[in-house]
Amino acid sequence: MTRHLGTGERIVGTEALHGGTTAEMRRLTIGGPGGGGTRDLVLRTFVDAEHAEDWLHREADALTSLAETGVPAPARVAVDPVAEQCEYPSLLMTCLAGRTVLDDEGVRLRLPVLARHLVSIHALRPVERPRDYVTLTTADTVVTPEAADAAAWAAAIDVIRGPVPPWEGRFLHRDFQPGNVLFEVAHPSPSGPRITGVVDWAGCSWGPADLDVAHCSTVLALLHGPAWGLRFAEAYEEAGGVLAARASERLYWQVRDGLACSEEVRSVARPWRAAGRTDLTARVVEERLDAYVTGLMNALG
Image (cartoon, rainbow, N blue to C red; front, side):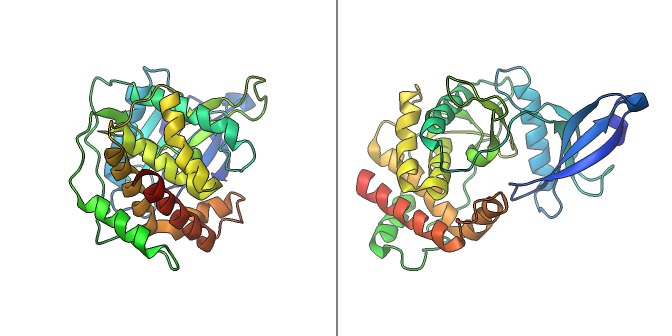
């Protein structure tokens, strides 16, 4: 994709970025003509993904739509969904300031900031609405962790056997969670954590706000402990967000996302350990998922 660089620019350095589960991410340092200044771009590459072309089209379209909003998302530079110019399907975009923060320290302050930002995303009304959301998990594909509370999991599985609750459409990120949110760290604001960017828009969809809230809740539960996952929906409402009116409807979406994670616990935990959270072994994450699903059934069931 070097033909999309400016006249006289060239790639002078690359750095692998951690955290991705479906694609490889690299920061490209671009040198200016005549040895001038540098700028950074990010190359997102799908090396082995069956739906790479679809994901890249969706993400590129989402970035185009977001360019006219106040949501801090990367700007699209170039996209090669079928690997005509690159070795693999790829997306080139601008590099945002900040970094992901996965540590337990400071989660109490970050939680309401995450909630407020998600409310602002759900308030967007793009000219071209993205496709409706898709969920792949079924009652028959759920993987109950070893030593899990069998009764709680059986009850949770029964929840998603039921009909899909009615929902009001919202603009969804579909993977809004700490691993896809960048925070300002170089010069932290005295007023508290500040988000500098939201990345990975490949799953951008149209659907119920509950779905995004449920996903972020699940990830918070696995990263920081079940109590934080159970708290996030409250923080979302405190920030002005609107969820399903009935507790049973909210439970459906929360449980659906928690159970979906059961099928990919090991792949979810791996990039967290690579990013420094070596305490998050597959066993620990499975235990937290069990505690979270059980907590949902106890609190909302």
